Image (cartoon, rainbow, N blue to C red):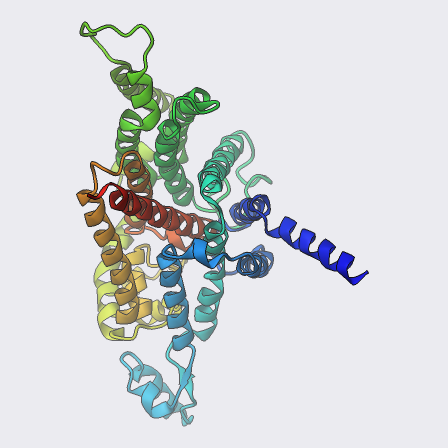
Length: 483
């Protein structure tokens, strides 16, 4: 009897930890994140469900962990864990004499002295509840990375298809939003850009950054399949068609960030399609190909027709009035003036709280100490709208060191890729795709905060793992061809 129970348990365990189950877990989790984690605010009600689910999915990923499969692929996960440890460090209570000696704490010590209150033990962070919230927010990208690391090689490419599908749903959702009420049920968050095509997000900029990143992913996906693969031609032309749909949607969104980022995204996409495996193989094996020189090759036809169609659709979008992004690109408004005026204040905050920072998530409260009278208005500033500077304010030199470590790792990998460029075949284009998506998010963080949105930070984390995997593949291929 016990043997039968043991066998049934083993079969059940294998079923729930098999390749299909791990892929379905990754897909379901990412879908939940996209539908419930589209806002950067910490008071969104869906986070009550999302974060516990992230912990559960993370626990599932650990139970299915294959250490050999994870070997050499975990550096992006280590970066996230290092940030988590830094947040834990910021939450450790410190003695009063140590805490008051920290930079930027004198004003609180003076207030306590004037009120006749003894200084209690306090954590390094100036907003413990917000730092704790930031720590919990890391459960989402960490779980996403662990679920991805459990996928086998065949399923990893299907994971990219899941990302494309979710981005397509957000694009389609945005199109339907334009047909309904600005405060209708298709807007998932109370604090949002009502009337704009925000998709599954609360902010139009975050939707636009996702669509721009998806253009790059589609460019790689279109031409990454061998020509003899099942439905390779359908995936190729469907991906190009999807790109041509996303271009006007970004314009309609009315996001300047999306419009600016769309340009390098389209250039990268053209390169990925032009040099991709499907394109080259279809050119190489064109039936009836003759020795005489043709006026245009199929690759050139694809490239020129794509550029022409993109320009045509963009022109029609501008002509037919929904070109809010172009209008906002060249007009000056109060928000842009505020962002410009904020820069010297933010730099001063970095200096005042260096080297330990003010604590992750504390910006909204700390900024009120520095907010000048001329910038006071009925609205309040909950983010710095420059995540590079806000990250330095809140995390100090330890956070900068972690980010620098990630940057050095990336540069070292690219140096290795440059050395192995000729021998890396088509794997190098997957590296370019992942690197450009990461750079797109980092560029978008100069004037906004896309990586504070749960769904986008989860996507960013998965793309970082994809970058790591493909760089490792390039290095293995070099070892194989080495004399």
